[in-house]
Structures are given as C-alpha cells and as structure tokens.
Amino acid sequence: ANILVLNGPNLNMLGKREPEHYGRQTLSGIIEELETLADEYEVRLHHFQSNAEHELVERVQEALDEKIDFILINPAAFTHTSVALRDAMATVKIPFIEIHLSNIHKREDFRQHSFFSDLAEGVIAGLGPIGYQLALAAAVEKLK
Ligand code: DQA
Image (cartoon, rainbow, N blue to C red; front, side):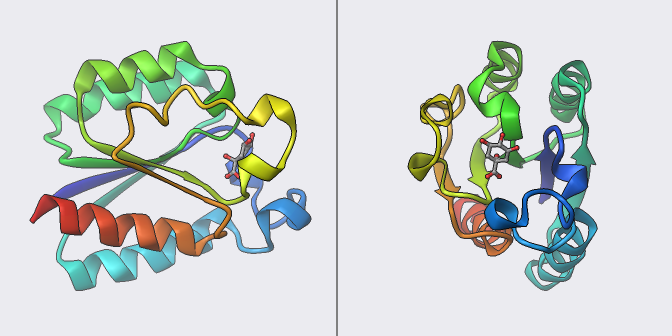
C-alpha cells in the first residue's frame, strides 16, 4: 500500500519551534521513525511538507494518479483556515487521518475549529510525534 504523509506550514521548523507546544523532535526525525515503522508494516511511505497552500493542494491532487491508498495529514495552521485544502481532500476522496502534535482543544479559540475533522477517518491530537506512528498503525489496520 502507498501512504502519503503531508505536513503543512512551519512544521519544517520542528525542533526549534515553540517546544512547549511541539516538543524538540525535528520533522526529519519524525519521518525517519515513521519510515522504519512503514518497513515493518510493509507499506510505502511518501512524504511532503510545504509552507504553501497551493503546493499542498497540488500534492493532494497528484495523489489520485499515484494511487495513494491513505493520507496522514497535519495541515498545521491550514487546519483552521484552508477551505482549498479541505476541498482537495474531498475531491480525491482518499481516506485520511488528521494529526496534531499539540492538543488543539486546550489551546486558543481560533484553533478549536478544523476544516478537516468531519471528513477524516480519525483525528489524533496532543500526543506529540508518536501521534504520527499511531496514525500509521491505524491506517495499516484500516487498509487490511
Ligand atoms: C498543529 C496545531 C495548529 O494549530 C498549528 O497551527 C500548527 C501545528 C499541531 O501539530 O499541533 O502549526 O497542527
């Protein structure tokens, strides 16, 4: 199976970025661990991070031709703002899990609404980097 991991704006700064919310692990560290797990599960991981909304929209559109079976997405700030990225997810109809490192529900009011959660198979928030691993485990289970 092919699994696409998408990370939105500022997640390239993980490690340096507000560690009280996002911890100290870098994005490449998270992806490396996920690759190891993907090998164990015998699935193929594809990863894309962008700070640009249109690049994420285009990556989602491409996923259709690429035969991506499942998407793990941390839309980051676009969670709360992007109708365009939501529409892309709805267009390709590829099942996905929404991930947040921090627990958005105990943060600011503007983080309480997600444009993705009502389309997602599931949502993981507040568990830090391990959230990505739990999401991969759940994706593999759902693809069986
Ligand atoms: C985030 C939470 C968002 O509110 C924030 O804008 C991010 C990261 C998280 O992983 O906790 O950039 O998605």
